[in-house]
Image (tube, protein in one colour):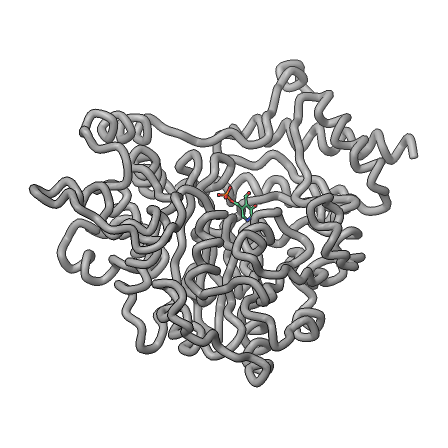
Length: 446
Ligand SMILES: Cc1ncc(COP(=O)(O)O)c(C=O)c1O
């Protein structure tokens, strides 16, 4: 290792913010409009166009684009909010069960709990998916967990690898006869729409947690689909550590539902995210239009134009950011292969992941030794992480008392490498050298 290399400090995941994002935020700040407004609306349109076409270069201010792509995406202040609103849109609440993989971040489960539903954890496949090694749900256990109370399953596209939605849809279709759609009791202004949504879906809803997976693709029914086009409802995260960031932020999208106008769904997301207020700040600005109604005491989780400004310029750069991730990953994969360390396979002939996380699993070590390796790498300047500690191991979820031996086994020897587009080729080289050195030292001492 050369001398300059020995002194590097590699943080875990700083954001990639260019002058373009800084300029756009300045423009938003100077524009006189900083909360939800024109930039948020434009970002929604552009994200919808990206999800539907994979393109970031369409003129989304044209009338044609407005007609085609508006009302398909709603931007919010986090993926947690997006996921909660997805479940609320479905009318999920007390008495309902929501199936969540044991191997995920807390937001996947807490959003369902916020709605009053019961979370049912399902363990993952032993060592993850056979081909990609992604910690995907065990689909036999998923099928067995569906009861007449189950209203949704939340697959998690962890690390940017898209779950097997063909399989998931097959299972929920097979269990269709157990499903009873919500009755419209007229008790909230949303209950009629929720009931129609549940009836249109006609089975357990597939509500994807795609916090990591904007830009990922997978074959569904033999043809390529973009993440956001597969599940009934999908949430994305634009948190500071995500591939695509607005600092904090997120978005929801959904598949066209038979007999339900996207405009109506979009309108209710707006109401849910802004106090149940029937006019947003922009609409209230119109001359003489101050008066508004509150149709229900709902939530406050709208995106601001300052955040959307970051997103607009991130989206211009996103294909390039994904390409850079691909180059870095290639080097990491080669290093792991040489060391006999298992890693996620982000791309196959049926999947192109968004390459969000580089998860590696070191064979033959226990949890304490894994933590030791993390410490040794940190001492040499390389920050790593663990995605994730399974939820049933967390204090908050002890009550669910789920048995998830495969999730625990997957976690016990897992390390997440630092993986972001600001890493230079030399940084990547350094991480690989430190990983190699650490593993070799460990193997010698064991
Ligand atoms: C799998 C998963 N789901 C949901 C979230 C929540 O995202 P946000 O911080 O945007 O609410 C995260 C955040 O890291 C996550 O990893």
